[in-house]
Amino acid sequence: MERGDFDVALSGLEDRPELRARHAVSLPYFEFREVLAVRAADSARYRKLSDLSNRRVATLGATMAYQILLDAERESNVIPVSYDDDIHPYSDLVAARVDAVLLDHIIAERSLHRMSGFVVLDSPIATGHYVAVFARADSALRDSADAILRERMRDGSLEKTFREWGVWDSSQSIHFARVLAASSPQGVAAVRNERGSIAAYLPSFLRAAGITLLLSCLSMALAVAIGVLVAAGRVYGSRIVQAPLAVYVEVVRGTPLLLQLFVIYYGLSSVVRLPAFLAAVIGLGLNYAAYESEIYRAALKAIPRVQLEAARTLGLSERQILRFVRGPQALRLALAPMTNDFVALLKDSSLVSVITVVELTKQAAIYATNMGSWVVPGILCAVIYLIFSLPLSRYARRLEKKWSVA
Amino acid sequence: MSALEIRGLEVMRGTHQVLRGFDLIVNPGEIVALMGASGAGKTTVLRAVAALEPISGGTITLGDVSLKPGPVPPESRLGALRAKVGMVFQEHALFEHLSAIENVVLAPVHVRHWQREAAMSKAAQLLDSLGVAERADALPRQLSGGQAQRVAIARALVLDPELLLMDEPTSALDPARRSALADTLRELTEGGRALLISTHDVDFAEACADRIVSLADGSIVQS
Image (cartoon, rainbow over all chains, first blue to last red; front, side, top):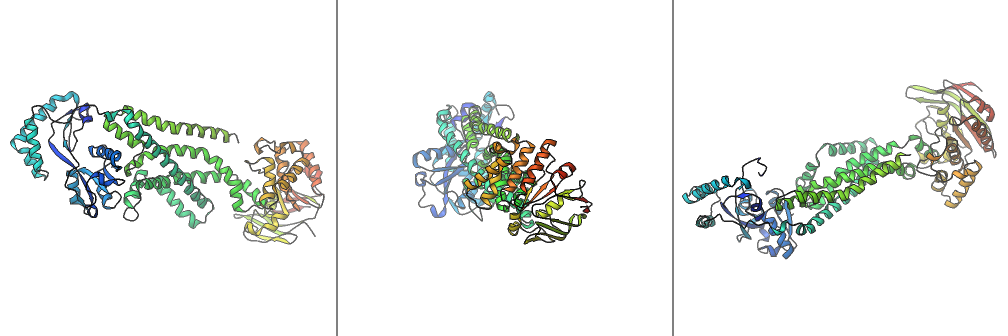
Protein backbone atom coordinates (compact mmCIF):
# COMPACT_ATOMS: atom_id res chain seq x y z
CA MET A 1 0.00 0.00 0.00
CA GLU A 2 2.77 2.43 0.88
CA ARG A 3 4.22 1.53 -2.50
CA GLY A 4 0.97 2.66 -4.13
CA ASP A 5 -0.08 -0.75 -5.49
CA PHE A 6 -3.54 -0.26 -3.99
CA ASP A 7 -5.46 2.35 -2.01
CA VAL A 8 -7.36 0.58 0.75
CA ALA A 9 -6.71 -2.57 2.76
CA LEU A 10 -9.77 -4.02 4.43
CA SER A 11 -11.29 -7.17 5.95
CA GLY A 12 -10.44 -8.29 9.43
CA LEU A 13 -7.37 -6.07 9.82
CA GLU A 14 -6.67 -5.74 13.51
CA ASP A 15 -6.05 -2.32 15.00
CA ARG A 16 -2.55 -2.75 16.39
CA PRO A 17 0.06 -0.18 17.46
CA GLU A 18 2.50 -1.41 14.80
CA LEU A 19 -0.10 -0.78 12.10
CA ARG A 20 -0.75 2.76 13.28
CA ALA A 21 2.96 3.45 13.45
CA ARG A 22 3.33 3.13 9.71
CA HIS A 23 -0.03 3.60 7.99
CA ALA A 24 -3.09 5.82 8.10
CA VAL A 25 -5.82 3.86 9.87
CA SER A 26 -9.60 4.33 9.76
CA LEU A 27 -11.79 4.46 12.82
CA PRO A 28 -12.54 1.02 14.27
CA TYR A 29 -15.71 -0.17 12.52
CA PHE A 30 -16.14 -3.51 14.30
CA GLU A 31 -15.34 -4.92 17.70
CA PHE A 32 -14.19 -8.51 17.82
CA ARG A 33 -13.45 -10.83 20.72
CA GLU A 34 -10.56 -13.26 20.93
CA VAL A 35 -12.24 -16.51 21.94
CA LEU A 36 -10.95 -19.96 22.80
CA ALA A 37 -12.24 -23.03 21.01
CA VAL A 38 -11.65 -26.45 22.60
CA ARG A 39 -12.84 -29.97 21.98
CA ALA A 40 -16.26 -30.57 23.55
CA ALA A 41 -14.83 -33.10 26.00
CA ASP A 42 -12.31 -30.54 27.27
CA SER A 43 -14.74 -27.65 27.76
CA ALA A 44 -14.88 -28.21 31.53
CA ARG A 45 -11.15 -28.20 32.20
CA TYR A 46 -9.93 -25.59 29.68
CA ARG A 47 -11.67 -22.32 30.53
CA LYS A 48 -8.87 -19.80 30.11
CA LEU A 49 -5.33 -19.63 28.75
CA SER A 50 -3.69 -20.45 32.07
CA ASP A 51 -5.55 -23.80 32.06
CA LEU A 52 -3.59 -24.67 28.90
CA SER A 53 -0.13 -24.92 30.39
CA ASN A 54 2.08 -27.16 28.19
CA ARG A 55 -0.81 -27.51 25.74
CA ARG A 56 -0.65 -26.60 22.07
CA VAL A 57 -2.83 -23.65 21.17
CA ALA A 58 -3.27 -22.76 17.51
CA THR A 59 -3.90 -19.43 15.83
CA LEU A 60 -3.07 -17.39 12.75
CA GLY A 61 0.50 -16.15 12.60
CA ALA A 62 1.28 -12.44 12.99
CA THR A 63 -2.03 -11.58 14.69
CA MET A 64 -3.07 -10.13 18.00
CA ALA A 65 -4.09 -13.64 19.05
CA TYR A 66 -0.60 -14.93 18.27
CA GLN A 67 0.88 -12.13 20.34
CA ILE A 68 -1.43 -13.07 23.22
CA LEU A 69 -0.24 -16.67 22.93
CA LEU A 70 3.39 -15.59 22.95
CA ASP A 71 2.70 -13.69 26.19
CA ALA A 72 0.89 -16.74 27.57
CA GLU A 73 3.89 -18.86 26.61
CA ARG A 74 6.05 -16.78 28.93
CA GLU A 75 3.50 -16.58 31.72
CA SER A 76 1.94 -20.04 31.75
CA ASN A 77 3.89 -22.24 29.33
CA VAL A 78 1.21 -22.34 26.66
CA ILE A 79 2.69 -23.67 23.39
CA PRO A 80 1.72 -21.36 20.50
CA VAL A 81 1.24 -22.99 17.08
CA SER A 82 1.08 -20.63 14.14
CA TYR A 83 -0.95 -21.34 10.97
CA ASP A 84 -1.12 -19.55 7.64
CA ASP A 85 -4.89 -19.95 7.32
CA ASP A 86 -7.88 -19.97 9.67
CA ILE A 87 -9.36 -23.36 8.69
CA HIS A 88 -6.63 -25.84 9.58
CA PRO A 89 -6.36 -24.68 13.22
CA TYR A 90 -9.91 -25.98 13.78
CA SER A 91 -9.52 -29.19 11.79
CA ASP A 92 -6.31 -29.89 13.72
CA LEU A 93 -8.18 -29.16 16.96
CA VAL A 94 -10.78 -31.78 16.07
CA ALA A 95 -7.94 -34.11 15.04
CA ALA A 96 -6.32 -33.58 18.48
CA ARG A 97 -3.14 -32.14 17.00
CA VAL A 98 -3.72 -29.01 19.07
CA ASP A 99 -5.73 -28.61 22.28
CA ALA A 100 -7.25 -25.21 21.69
CA VAL A 101 -7.61 -22.47 19.11
CA LEU A 102 -7.51 -18.77 19.95
CA LEU A 103 -9.02 -16.63 17.20
CA ASP A 104 -11.52 -13.85 16.51
CA HIS A 105 -15.08 -14.83 17.43
CA ILE A 106 -16.18 -14.25 13.83
CA ILE A 107 -13.74 -16.88 12.59
CA ALA A 108 -14.63 -19.26 15.41
CA GLU A 109 -18.35 -19.02 14.70
CA ARG A 110 -17.86 -19.48 10.98
CA SER A 111 -15.80 -22.60 11.68
CA LEU A 112 -18.60 -23.98 13.87
CA HIS A 113 -20.85 -23.98 10.79
CA ARG A 114 -18.24 -25.86 8.82
CA MET A 115 -17.34 -28.65 11.23
CA SER A 116 -18.30 -30.11 14.57
CA GLY A 117 -16.37 -31.64 17.44
CA PHE A 118 -15.40 -28.47 19.28
CA VAL A 119 -17.06 -25.71 21.27
CA VAL A 120 -16.32 -22.00 21.51
CA LEU A 121 -15.96 -20.73 25.07
CA ASP A 122 -18.18 -17.78 26.02
CA SER A 123 -15.83 -15.56 27.96
CA PRO A 124 -13.48 -13.66 25.65
CA ILE A 125 -9.74 -13.59 26.27
CA ALA A 126 -9.40 -10.10 24.81
CA THR A 127 -11.21 -7.66 22.54
CA GLY A 128 -9.93 -5.80 19.53
CA HIS A 129 -11.15 -3.78 16.56
CA TYR A 130 -11.10 -4.12 12.82
CA VAL A 131 -9.94 -1.12 10.82
CA ALA A 132 -9.35 -0.14 7.22
CA VAL A 133 -5.81 0.84 6.32
CA PHE A 134 -4.54 3.53 3.96
CA ALA A 135 -1.17 4.77 2.87
CA ARG A 136 0.34 7.11 5.40
CA ALA A 137 0.51 9.92 2.87
CA ASP A 138 -3.14 9.41 1.98
CA SER A 139 -4.77 10.64 5.21
CA ALA A 140 -7.29 12.63 3.14
CA LEU A 141 -8.76 9.39 1.79
CA ARG A 142 -8.75 8.01 5.31
CA ASP A 143 -10.58 11.06 6.61
CA SER A 144 -13.32 10.78 4.02
CA ALA A 145 -13.64 7.05 4.77
CA ASP A 146 -13.98 7.90 8.47
CA ALA A 147 -16.71 10.42 7.65
CA ILE A 148 -18.61 7.81 5.67
CA LEU A 149 -18.21 5.19 8.41
CA ARG A 150 -19.34 7.62 11.10
CA GLU A 151 -22.37 8.57 9.02
CA ARG A 152 -23.30 4.93 8.45
CA MET A 153 -22.87 4.12 12.13
CA ARG A 154 -25.19 7.00 12.94
CA ASP A 155 -27.94 6.23 10.40
CA GLY A 156 -27.98 2.49 11.14
CA SER A 157 -26.98 1.34 7.69
CA LEU A 158 -23.75 -0.23 8.95
CA GLU A 159 -25.75 -2.12 11.60
CA LYS A 160 -28.08 -3.32 8.83
CA THR A 161 -25.13 -4.59 6.82
CA PHE A 162 -23.70 -6.39 9.84
CA ARG A 163 -27.09 -7.91 10.63
CA GLU A 164 -27.48 -9.10 7.06
CA TRP A 165 -24.27 -11.03 7.40
CA GLY A 166 -25.10 -12.34 10.86
CA VAL A 167 -22.23 -10.60 12.66
CA TRP A 168 -24.19 -8.03 14.64
CA ASP A 169 -24.39 -8.31 18.41
CA SER A 170 -25.03 -6.03 21.38
CA SER A 171 -21.38 -5.22 21.88
CA GLN A 172 -21.31 -3.53 18.46
CA SER A 173 -23.94 -0.95 19.46
CA ILE A 174 -21.96 -0.07 22.60
CA HIS A 175 -18.86 0.16 20.45
CA PHE A 176 -20.61 2.38 17.85
CA ALA A 177 -21.84 4.70 20.58
CA ARG A 178 -18.33 4.99 21.97
CA VAL A 179 -16.86 5.77 18.55
CA LEU A 180 -19.48 8.39 17.76
CA ALA A 181 -19.07 10.06 21.14
CA ALA A 182 -15.32 10.44 20.76
CA SER A 183 -14.18 13.64 19.08
CA SER A 184 -11.02 12.17 17.62
CA PRO A 185 -10.62 8.71 16.08
CA GLN A 186 -10.40 6.08 18.74
CA GLY A 187 -8.00 3.26 18.78
CA VAL A 188 -4.83 1.99 20.27
CA ALA A 189 -1.97 4.43 20.70
CA ALA A 190 0.21 4.89 17.67
CA VAL A 191 3.51 3.97 19.18
CA ARG A 192 6.29 1.85 17.85
CA ASN A 193 6.02 -1.25 19.94
CA GLU A 194 9.02 -2.25 22.00
CA ARG A 195 8.43 -5.73 20.61
CA GLY A 196 9.85 -4.49 17.33
CA SER A 197 13.35 -4.06 18.65
CA ILE A 198 16.06 -6.50 17.67
CA ALA A 199 16.94 -7.39 21.24
CA ALA A 200 13.39 -8.48 21.94
CA TYR A 201 13.35 -10.72 18.89
CA LEU A 202 16.85 -12.14 19.03
CA PRO A 203 16.10 -15.06 21.40
CA SER A 204 13.20 -16.31 19.27
CA PHE A 205 15.30 -15.73 16.16
CA LEU A 206 18.11 -17.85 17.50
CA ARG A 207 15.68 -20.53 18.59
CA ALA A 208 14.16 -20.54 15.10
CA ALA A 209 17.67 -20.81 13.65
CA GLY A 210 18.27 -23.79 15.92
CA ILE A 211 15.07 -25.38 14.66
CA THR A 212 16.14 -24.81 11.04
CA LEU A 213 19.51 -26.43 11.75
CA LEU A 214 18.06 -29.37 13.71
CA LEU A 215 15.36 -29.92 11.11
CA SER A 216 17.92 -29.84 8.28
CA CYS A 217 20.33 -32.22 10.02
CA LEU A 218 17.63 -34.76 10.88
CA SER A 219 16.10 -34.55 7.40
CA MET A 220 19.51 -34.97 5.77
CA ALA A 221 20.29 -37.98 7.95
CA LEU A 222 17.00 -39.56 6.88
CA ALA A 223 17.64 -38.60 3.24
CA VAL A 224 21.11 -40.18 3.30
CA ALA A 225 19.90 -43.39 4.93
CA ILE A 226 16.97 -43.85 2.56
CA GLY A 227 18.99 -42.57 -0.41
CA VAL A 228 21.66 -45.24 0.15
CA LEU A 229 19.03 -47.98 0.32
CA VAL A 230 17.24 -46.73 -2.79
CA ALA A 231 20.51 -46.43 -4.73
CA ALA A 232 21.63 -49.90 -3.61
CA GLY A 233 18.24 -51.31 -4.63
CA ARG A 234 18.44 -49.67 -8.03
CA VAL A 235 22.03 -50.77 -8.72
CA TYR A 236 21.98 -54.25 -7.20
CA GLY A 237 18.31 -55.18 -6.96
CA SER A 238 16.24 -57.31 -9.31
CA ARG A 239 13.83 -55.68 -11.73
CA ILE A 240 10.99 -56.17 -9.23
CA VAL A 241 12.91 -54.05 -6.73
CA GLN A 242 14.16 -51.52 -9.25
CA ALA A 243 10.82 -50.57 -10.78
CA PRO A 244 9.03 -49.25 -7.66
CA LEU A 245 12.18 -47.44 -6.55
CA ALA A 246 12.42 -45.72 -9.93
CA VAL A 247 8.76 -44.69 -9.62
CA TYR A 248 9.40 -43.30 -6.12
CA VAL A 249 12.37 -41.24 -7.33
CA GLU A 250 10.52 -39.85 -10.34
CA VAL A 251 7.31 -39.03 -8.43
CA VAL A 252 9.21 -37.24 -5.67
CA ARG A 253 11.42 -35.33 -8.09
CA GLY A 254 8.54 -34.49 -10.38
CA THR A 255 6.19 -32.97 -7.78
CA PRO A 256 6.59 -29.87 -5.59
CA LEU A 257 7.97 -30.32 -2.08
CA LEU A 258 5.21 -28.01 -0.87
CA LEU A 259 2.58 -30.44 -2.13
CA GLN A 260 4.38 -33.36 -0.51
CA LEU A 261 4.42 -31.56 2.84
CA PHE A 262 0.70 -30.83 2.60
CA VAL A 263 -0.07 -34.46 1.74
CA ILE A 264 2.06 -35.83 4.59
CA TYR A 265 0.74 -33.44 7.23
CA TYR A 266 -2.87 -32.81 6.22
CA GLY A 267 -3.60 -35.44 3.57
CA LEU A 268 -2.54 -38.40 5.66
CA SER A 269 -4.00 -37.06 8.90
CA SER A 270 -6.98 -39.41 8.70
CA VAL A 271 -4.58 -42.36 8.60
CA VAL A 272 -1.62 -41.22 10.70
CA ARG A 273 -1.55 -38.04 12.73
CA LEU A 274 2.06 -36.90 12.61
CA PRO A 275 3.29 -34.06 14.81
CA ALA A 276 4.29 -31.09 12.65
CA PHE A 277 8.03 -31.29 13.28
CA LEU A 278 8.11 -35.03 12.57
CA ALA A 279 6.03 -34.52 9.42
CA ALA A 280 8.52 -31.84 8.35
CA VAL A 281 11.50 -34.15 8.91
CA ILE A 282 9.80 -36.99 7.03
CA GLY A 283 8.65 -34.73 4.20
CA LEU A 284 12.05 -33.12 3.67
CA GLY A 285 13.86 -36.41 4.27
CA LEU A 286 11.80 -38.40 1.77
CA ASN A 287 12.07 -35.62 -0.78
CA TYR A 288 15.83 -35.29 -0.54
CA ALA A 289 16.27 -39.07 -0.36
CA ALA A 290 15.21 -39.19 -4.01
CA TYR A 291 17.90 -36.70 -4.98
CA GLU A 292 20.53 -38.35 -2.77
CA SER A 293 19.76 -41.76 -4.26
CA GLU A 294 20.48 -40.40 -7.73
CA ILE A 295 23.82 -39.03 -6.53
CA TYR A 296 24.78 -42.36 -4.98
CA ARG A 297 23.58 -44.31 -8.00
CA ALA A 298 25.67 -42.16 -10.33
CA ALA A 299 28.65 -42.47 -7.97
CA LEU A 300 28.35 -46.26 -7.80
CA LYS A 301 28.07 -46.45 -11.58
CA ALA A 302 31.12 -44.22 -11.95
CA ILE A 303 33.48 -46.78 -10.41
CA PRO A 304 35.24 -48.50 -13.37
CA ARG A 305 33.92 -52.00 -14.05
CA VAL A 306 37.44 -53.34 -14.36
CA GLN A 307 38.10 -52.55 -10.68
CA LEU A 308 35.03 -54.56 -9.71
CA GLU A 309 36.23 -57.44 -11.89
CA ALA A 310 39.70 -57.25 -10.35
CA ALA A 311 38.07 -57.50 -6.93
CA ARG A 312 36.11 -60.54 -8.08
CA THR A 313 39.23 -62.31 -9.34
CA LEU A 314 40.72 -61.74 -5.87
CA GLY A 315 37.80 -63.68 -4.38
CA LEU A 316 35.91 -60.80 -2.74
CA SER A 317 32.17 -61.32 -2.40
CA GLU A 318 29.74 -58.77 -3.87
CA ARG A 319 29.16 -57.44 -0.37
CA GLN A 320 32.90 -57.09 0.27
CA ILE A 321 33.38 -55.39 -3.09
CA LEU A 322 30.72 -52.82 -2.16
CA ARG A 323 32.21 -52.31 1.28
CA PHE A 324 35.91 -52.17 0.46
CA VAL A 325 36.17 -51.14 -3.21
CA ARG A 326 33.03 -49.59 -4.67
CA GLY A 327 31.47 -47.92 -1.62
CA PRO A 328 34.47 -45.93 -0.38
CA GLN A 329 35.26 -44.59 -3.85
CA ALA A 330 31.62 -43.77 -4.57
CA LEU A 331 31.37 -41.92 -1.25
CA ARG A 332 34.23 -39.64 -2.26
CA LEU A 333 32.50 -38.83 -5.52
CA ALA A 334 29.20 -38.23 -3.70
CA LEU A 335 30.51 -36.06 -0.88
CA ALA A 336 30.66 -32.75 -2.75
CA PRO A 337 27.20 -33.00 -4.38
CA MET A 338 25.83 -34.20 -1.03
CA THR A 339 27.18 -31.12 0.69
CA ASN A 340 25.62 -28.92 -1.98
CA ASP A 341 22.33 -30.74 -1.44
CA PHE A 342 22.53 -30.09 2.27
CA VAL A 343 22.85 -26.36 1.60
CA ALA A 344 19.81 -26.59 -0.67
CA LEU A 345 17.91 -28.50 2.00
CA LEU A 346 18.78 -25.87 4.59
CA LYS A 347 17.03 -23.30 2.42
CA ASP A 348 14.13 -25.57 1.41
CA SER A 349 13.45 -26.18 5.09
CA SER A 350 11.76 -22.76 5.09
CA LEU A 351 8.83 -24.42 3.26
CA VAL A 352 7.80 -26.36 6.36
CA SER A 353 6.27 -23.22 7.85
CA VAL A 354 3.17 -24.21 5.83
CA ILE A 355 2.67 -27.08 8.25
CA THR A 356 3.02 -24.83 11.33
CA VAL A 357 6.71 -25.33 12.10
CA VAL A 358 8.17 -21.94 13.03
CA GLU A 359 11.67 -22.00 11.60
CA LEU A 360 14.02 -19.20 10.65
CA THR A 361 12.21 -17.74 7.63
CA LYS A 362 8.82 -17.94 9.32
CA GLN A 363 10.23 -16.20 12.39
CA ALA A 364 11.63 -13.48 10.14
CA ALA A 365 8.19 -13.09 8.54
CA ILE A 366 6.52 -12.78 11.95
CA TYR A 367 9.13 -10.26 13.01
CA ALA A 368 8.75 -8.30 9.78
CA THR A 369 4.96 -8.22 10.02
CA ASN A 370 5.03 -6.94 13.57
CA MET A 371 7.74 -4.43 12.82
CA GLY A 372 6.36 -3.26 9.52
CA SER A 373 9.66 -3.61 7.73
CA TRP A 374 11.59 -6.43 6.14
CA VAL A 375 14.94 -4.67 6.27
CA VAL A 376 16.24 -5.77 9.67
CA PRO A 377 14.52 -9.17 9.85
CA GLY A 378 15.47 -9.90 6.23
CA ILE A 379 19.13 -9.06 6.73
CA LEU A 380 19.29 -10.92 10.04
CA CYS A 381 17.63 -13.98 8.52
CA ALA A 382 19.93 -13.93 5.47
CA VAL A 383 23.01 -13.59 7.66
CA ILE A 384 22.05 -16.64 9.72
CA TYR A 385 21.43 -18.72 6.58
CA LEU A 386 24.79 -17.62 5.20
CA ILE A 387 26.55 -18.51 8.46
CA PHE A 388 25.19 -22.03 8.00
CA SER A 389 25.70 -22.40 4.28
CA LEU A 390 28.90 -20.56 3.34
CA PRO A 391 31.32 -22.85 5.22
CA LEU A 392 29.53 -25.87 3.75
CA SER A 393 29.74 -24.52 0.22
CA ARG A 394 33.46 -23.87 0.69
CA TYR A 395 33.93 -27.36 2.07
CA ALA A 396 32.16 -28.80 -1.01
CA ARG A 397 34.41 -26.83 -3.37
CA ARG A 398 37.51 -28.04 -1.51
CA LEU A 399 36.32 -31.65 -1.74
CA GLU A 400 35.62 -31.25 -5.44
CA LYS A 401 39.11 -29.92 -6.01
CA LYS A 402 40.72 -32.59 -3.88
CA TRP A 403 39.09 -35.55 -5.61
CA SER A 404 39.18 -34.14 -9.12
CA VAL A 405 42.98 -34.61 -9.04
CA ALA A 406 42.42 -38.38 -9.07
CA MET B 1 48.40 -82.97 -14.52
CA SER B 2 48.08 -79.79 -16.55
CA ALA B 3 47.64 -76.41 -14.87
CA LEU B 4 44.92 -75.46 -17.34
CA GLU B 5 43.01 -77.47 -19.89
CA ILE B 6 40.63 -75.78 -22.33
CA ARG B 7 38.56 -78.01 -24.62
CA GLY B 8 36.34 -76.73 -27.45
CA LEU B 9 35.77 -73.37 -25.81
CA GLU B 10 33.00 -71.26 -27.33
CA VAL B 11 32.08 -67.77 -26.19
CA MET B 12 29.29 -65.67 -27.64
CA ARG B 13 29.01 -61.93 -27.33
CA GLY B 14 25.49 -61.09 -28.39
CA THR B 15 25.06 -62.85 -31.70
CA HIS B 16 28.79 -62.73 -32.44
CA GLN B 17 30.79 -65.87 -31.72
CA VAL B 18 34.09 -64.64 -30.27
CA LEU B 19 35.62 -68.07 -29.62
CA ARG B 20 34.77 -71.12 -31.70
CA GLY B 21 36.21 -74.41 -30.51
CA PHE B 22 39.36 -73.18 -28.85
CA ASP B 23 41.68 -75.81 -27.30
CA LEU B 24 44.69 -75.18 -25.07
CA ILE B 25 46.72 -76.99 -22.45
CA VAL B 26 49.07 -75.09 -20.15
CA ASN B 27 51.44 -77.18 -18.03
CA PRO B 28 52.74 -76.25 -14.57
CA GLY B 29 55.76 -73.93 -14.76
CA GLU B 30 55.02 -73.09 -18.36
CA ILE B 31 54.56 -69.63 -19.88
CA VAL B 32 52.17 -69.57 -22.82
CA ALA B 33 51.73 -66.42 -24.89
CA LEU B 34 48.43 -65.92 -26.72
CA MET B 35 49.00 -63.86 -29.83
CA GLY B 36 46.76 -62.49 -32.51
CA ALA B 37 45.27 -59.33 -33.91
CA SER B 38 42.95 -57.15 -31.86
CA GLY B 39 39.54 -58.79 -31.64
CA ALA B 40 40.96 -62.26 -32.25
CA GLY B 41 39.71 -63.36 -28.84
CA LYS B 42 42.89 -63.31 -26.70
CA THR B 43 41.40 -61.31 -23.86
CA THR B 44 38.19 -63.32 -24.04
CA VAL B 45 40.13 -66.52 -23.36
CA LEU B 46 41.63 -64.98 -20.22
CA ARG B 47 38.27 -63.59 -19.07
CA ALA B 48 36.58 -66.95 -19.61
CA VAL B 49 39.25 -68.72 -17.55
CA ALA B 50 38.83 -66.09 -14.79
CA ALA B 51 35.05 -66.73 -14.85
CA LEU B 52 34.32 -63.15 -15.83
CA GLU B 53 32.62 -64.23 -19.05
CA PRO B 54 29.92 -66.89 -19.55
CA ILE B 55 30.89 -69.70 -21.90
CA SER B 56 28.49 -71.18 -24.39
CA GLY B 57 30.38 -74.36 -25.22
CA GLY B 58 33.32 -76.55 -24.18
CA THR B 59 35.01 -76.87 -20.80
CA ILE B 60 37.73 -75.14 -18.83
CA THR B 61 39.48 -77.38 -16.30
CA LEU B 62 41.94 -76.36 -13.59
CA GLY B 63 42.82 -79.51 -11.62
CA ASP B 64 39.65 -80.43 -9.77
CA VAL B 65 37.78 -77.24 -10.75
CA SER B 66 35.92 -76.90 -14.01
CA LEU B 67 33.78 -74.31 -15.74
CA LYS B 68 30.91 -75.47 -17.92
CA PRO B 69 28.62 -73.73 -20.45
CA GLY B 70 25.99 -71.48 -18.90
CA PRO B 71 25.91 -68.23 -17.00
CA VAL B 72 28.83 -67.27 -14.76
CA PRO B 73 28.33 -69.06 -11.42
CA PRO B 74 27.79 -66.82 -8.37
CA GLU B 75 30.98 -65.78 -6.55
CA SER B 76 30.02 -67.96 -3.60
CA ARG B 77 30.62 -71.03 -5.80
CA LEU B 78 33.84 -69.79 -7.37
CA GLY B 79 36.05 -69.91 -4.25
CA ALA B 80 38.11 -72.87 -5.45
CA LEU B 81 38.70 -71.25 -8.85
CA ARG B 82 39.60 -67.88 -7.30
CA ALA B 83 42.16 -69.64 -5.09
CA LYS B 84 43.89 -71.12 -8.14
CA VAL B 85 43.79 -68.26 -10.65
CA GLY B 86 45.15 -64.73 -10.40
CA MET B 87 44.69 -62.08 -13.05
CA VAL B 88 46.53 -58.89 -14.00
CA PHE B 89 44.38 -56.59 -16.12
CA GLN B 90 45.61 -54.49 -19.01
CA GLU B 91 44.62 -51.28 -17.19
CA HIS B 92 46.05 -52.68 -13.92
CA ALA B 93 42.68 -51.97 -12.29
CA LEU B 94 44.25 -50.94 -8.98
CA PHE B 95 41.77 -49.72 -6.35
CA GLU B 96 42.22 -45.97 -6.64
CA HIS B 97 41.45 -45.12 -3.01
CA LEU B 98 43.98 -47.57 -1.54
CA SER B 99 47.76 -47.27 -1.37
CA ALA B 100 49.89 -49.78 -3.28
CA ILE B 101 50.40 -52.02 -0.26
CA GLU B 102 46.74 -51.75 0.81
CA ASN B 103 45.78 -52.95 -2.68
CA VAL B 104 47.95 -56.01 -2.10
CA VAL B 105 46.73 -56.90 1.41
CA LEU B 106 42.99 -56.42 0.77
CA ALA B 107 42.32 -60.01 -0.37
CA PRO B 108 44.62 -61.79 2.12
CA VAL B 109 43.00 -59.96 5.04
CA HIS B 110 39.35 -60.08 3.97
CA VAL B 111 39.17 -63.22 1.82
CA ARG B 112 41.77 -65.46 3.43
CA HIS B 113 41.49 -63.89 6.90
CA TRP B 114 45.23 -63.60 7.42
CA GLN B 115 46.52 -61.58 10.33
CA ARG B 116 47.03 -58.05 9.08
CA GLU B 117 50.72 -58.01 10.13
CA ALA B 118 51.40 -61.24 8.26
CA ALA B 119 49.66 -59.90 5.15
CA MET B 120 51.58 -56.62 5.34
CA SER B 121 54.96 -58.35 5.63
CA LYS B 122 54.19 -60.73 2.75
CA ALA B 123 53.01 -57.78 0.66
CA ALA B 124 56.10 -55.73 1.49
CA GLN B 125 58.28 -58.66 0.53
CA LEU B 126 56.49 -59.07 -2.81
CA LEU B 127 56.68 -55.35 -3.63
CA ASP B 128 60.36 -55.48 -2.80
CA SER B 129 61.01 -58.45 -5.05
CA LEU B 130 59.18 -56.63 -7.86
CA GLY B 131 61.28 -53.49 -7.27
CA VAL B 132 58.51 -51.17 -6.05
CA ALA B 133 59.06 -51.39 -2.28
CA GLU B 134 59.61 -47.66 -1.97
CA ARG B 135 56.21 -46.97 -3.58
CA ALA B 136 54.31 -49.05 -1.03
CA ASP B 137 52.45 -46.07 0.43
CA ALA B 138 51.78 -44.28 -2.86
CA LEU B 139 48.26 -44.06 -4.27
CA PRO B 140 47.73 -45.66 -7.71
CA ARG B 141 47.43 -42.26 -9.41
CA GLN B 142 50.90 -41.39 -8.13
CA LEU B 143 52.48 -44.44 -9.78
CA SER B 144 54.00 -44.69 -13.26
CA GLY B 145 52.55 -47.25 -15.67
CA GLY B 146 55.36 -49.73 -14.94
CA GLN B 147 55.07 -49.31 -11.17
CA ALA B 148 51.30 -49.70 -11.25
CA GLN B 149 51.69 -52.90 -13.23
CA ARG B 150 54.13 -54.32 -10.70
CA VAL B 151 51.77 -53.50 -7.86
CA ALA B 152 48.98 -55.23 -9.80
CA ILE B 153 51.23 -58.28 -10.23
CA ALA B 154 51.98 -58.27 -6.50
CA ARG B 155 48.25 -58.07 -5.76
CA ALA B 156 47.56 -61.08 -7.97
CA LEU B 157 50.53 -63.06 -6.60
CA VAL B 158 50.00 -62.50 -2.90
CA LEU B 159 47.44 -65.32 -2.75
CA ASP B 160 49.96 -67.59 -4.50
CA PRO B 161 47.85 -68.67 -7.52
CA GLU B 162 48.81 -71.74 -9.54
CA LEU B 163 47.90 -69.94 -12.74
CA LEU B 164 48.50 -66.25 -13.45
CA LEU B 165 46.60 -64.61 -16.30
CA MET B 166 48.06 -61.42 -17.77
CA ASP B 167 46.29 -59.26 -20.32
CA GLU B 168 48.58 -57.21 -22.58
CA PRO B 169 51.24 -56.63 -19.89
CA THR B 170 53.53 -54.62 -22.16
CA SER B 171 51.02 -52.13 -23.49
CA ALA B 172 52.09 -49.35 -21.09
CA LEU B 173 55.82 -50.13 -21.03
CA ASP B 174 58.83 -48.78 -22.92
CA PRO B 175 61.16 -51.34 -24.62
CA ALA B 176 63.70 -51.46 -21.75
CA ARG B 177 60.93 -52.19 -19.27
CA ARG B 178 59.56 -54.91 -21.53
CA SER B 179 62.67 -57.04 -21.34
CA ALA B 180 62.88 -56.48 -17.59
CA LEU B 181 59.27 -57.65 -17.32
CA ALA B 182 60.11 -60.78 -19.32
CA ASP B 183 62.81 -61.62 -16.76
CA THR B 184 60.44 -60.96 -13.87
CA LEU B 185 57.78 -63.23 -15.35
CA ARG B 186 60.26 -66.06 -15.84
CA GLU B 187 61.08 -65.90 -12.13
CA LEU B 188 57.39 -66.19 -11.29
CA THR B 189 57.25 -69.72 -12.74
CA GLU B 190 59.64 -71.07 -10.12
CA GLY B 191 57.72 -73.51 -7.98
CA GLY B 192 55.54 -74.59 -10.89
CA ARG B 193 53.32 -71.55 -11.40
CA ALA B 194 51.94 -71.35 -14.95
CA LEU B 195 51.42 -68.09 -16.85
CA LEU B 196 48.96 -67.44 -19.65
CA ILE B 197 49.70 -64.09 -21.28
CA SER B 198 47.80 -62.32 -24.02
CA THR B 199 50.01 -60.01 -26.08
CA HIS B 200 50.53 -58.72 -29.57
CA ASP B 201 54.19 -57.94 -28.86
CA VAL B 202 56.19 -60.60 -30.76
CA ASP B 203 59.60 -59.72 -29.27
CA PHE B 204 58.22 -59.86 -25.75
CA ALA B 205 56.45 -63.17 -26.41
CA GLU B 206 59.59 -64.71 -27.81
CA ALA B 207 61.66 -63.40 -24.89
CA CYS B 208 59.54 -64.89 -22.13
CA ALA B 209 57.18 -67.55 -23.43
CA ASP B 210 57.84 -71.28 -23.64
CA ARG B 211 55.16 -71.54 -26.26
CA ILE B 212 53.28 -69.11 -28.48
CA VAL B 213 49.72 -69.81 -29.54
CA SER B 214 48.31 -67.72 -32.37
CA LEU B 215 44.63 -66.96 -32.45
CA ALA B 216 42.64 -65.75 -35.40
CA ASP B 217 38.88 -65.42 -35.61
CA GLY B 218 38.27 -67.33 -32.40
CA SER B 219 40.38 -70.41 -32.91
CA ILE B 220 44.01 -71.49 -33.02
CA VAL B 221 45.84 -70.97 -36.28
CA GLN B 222 49.34 -71.87 -35.14
CA SER B 223 50.92 -73.37 -32.04
